[in-house]
Image 1 (spheres, rainbow, N blue to C red):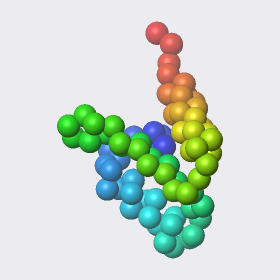
Image 2 (image 1 turned 60 degrees about the vertical axis):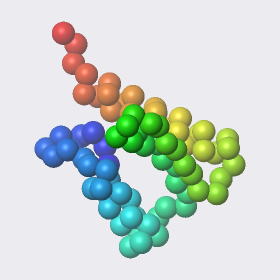
Image 3 (image 1 turned 180 degrees about the vertical axis):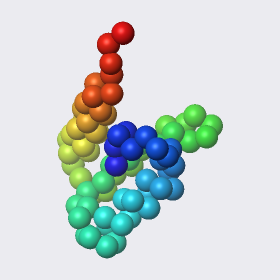
Length: 77
């Protein structure tokens, strides 16, 4: 899933269903970390059994992938 699929908004339920398909049907997920913003603005995070450095690494890679997507969509004025 990435920001390139602009036709429809990606809801939390859709994203989780997509992720669950990789877990249940394809058994592709080895470890997982998440960050979520609740409706009241609270930020929540969690992760599977990993060392803290691995969790931080997953978050960092996710951040870099997001920045890459942002740059791909950016057009100079």
